[in-house]
Image (tube, rainbow, N blue to C red; front, side):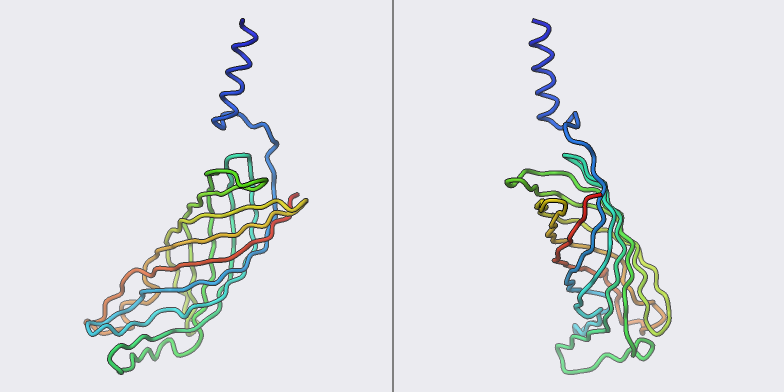
Length: 199
């Protein structure tokens, strides 16, 4: 009887992820994504200035278990400013007339939601530290992101497709605009893929 109860308890714990039937796994990855931004600076008539949509590349290190994954990534996203003017007027930003590049450091934690064949769908959450560089002026900003990832094993490799939504404070400084310009939070939507090598 006691042997039977031990087997039932072991099966129950495994089903709820309380045990680790598979060994934890380290991996190194290279990622590419496309990001669209909204927000940054806006005046009353609706004229907005924001970072341009751009492609981003980066590398990561991850530590995975059957139900959890911890990661750290660094990335680089070169681009410029985009002005959206609904009235035909131009928004002048003399201090940022050159490129506007983003460098990012992003730790993350992921939790398995459900399996898909040999793969799995993960919920992803984490803070971000961004460094915006415009006109040789560094602008550090804190934010956060949330999203989902689909991981598919390919032998010694893992293909990770992801979508992410992030929010952070405006990358523009208050002294770059007049008193009528608001600096709403910067929102970002990203879609991309990452190829991970199991170590």
